[in-house]
Length: 503
Ligand code: KIV
Ligand code: ZN
Image 1 (tube, rainbow, N blue to C red):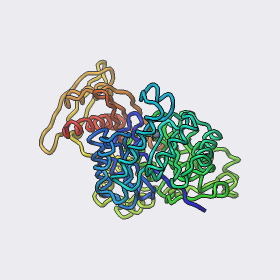
Image 2: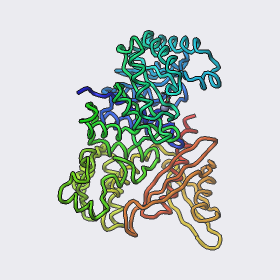
Image 3: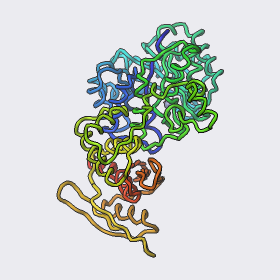
Image 4: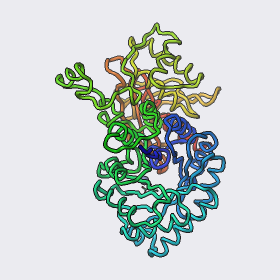
């Protein structure tokens, strides 16, 4: 039974999800969890695109030693050299060079003839090979490229030294049978195909990314590129957890395994969702809240009699604890720490202590604390990255002209306070924060949801704010939804402030 290589691109293609930008510290936190999850390759970023991305890749390359670290580059010298520089400290560096090959891209985007495309691709791979041994090449929009031309490109880049050839379905256009036939066609027609790993990279525009990837595996691909929670450009990429659990659950059909520690799936999914601010739909396969919930009486009865009647996977396999131990006001530090561990989190002492303090504050306001409450506090702790402004206090007057008074703390000593009117209390708070910070955000998205049921439930607020053409997400929890909203907005504004400071 051969192993399928899991190439995670959460930190590169996943981060291309609208509104999901991550700072280098957040990327490092996700990278640590991806290493615990045991992915084979981690695409850490696209270094030429920004200083932040360069820094993220080099930080990850320095710290994560047990996973191959990959950086993306166009088939352009300065991109490739920049990727190599960012990967300098990596133990197992990989440079991923890409160049579009389809007629549409050649004609309208690149204005290059076929011969020139092959020449540029080969030159790119050779240049990357001067820096590292492990080079991957992607003919972008491969699934819409003429198959015969694709054969020529793939053969040429393998001859030039690419150890992996990735066949992207860049625009999510393929359907399973057709995509599988393309992989088979390459296997049958590229003379030197056995010298390289065939990889697949599918987008989800038609909701087929996972199906296409699995069909390709059946046809002989041995690397799958995917992202946690399926996040990514437009409708996203193939979801890592769905690919891994499909291979595991249907080992009888696929005949392959992966190295993934599936018990880390839930923790990884939560960290990615918490830090990107991209919430997981309730009925999402594997990691959605309803994925293991049985609502119908007939199903519940069946599961109680014999679990396998309606469950094809055990929740424990992906790290979902079956027991919902409820903590309360009297629970001590020890019980709390044990519980955090049972939920699958391994927090450094300082974060654990701070989360415990937050838990005590919450327990004063809320009688019973559920798993989801604790997870929400952990996510809050994790999204607490470097900040410039901290909410000190907040009060609102909801009268005929809603007015918010906000006090912000800057560092240890400085206090800023002001009040402003708004169209409603939330509008007034956000406007006051704009006024105090001097950063004017346009609200693109705002939502509040209860983390658990009950009137005393924790409220989780998420915002997406646009500042100077870039979008930033913020998230926060509190038993007071107005406070959660203010903190979530401030969380997003802090990301802008930190970026400005760095500049
Ligand atoms: O979707 C795509 O084609 C890509 C390439 C850069 C691999 O993300
Ligand atoms: Zn992609």
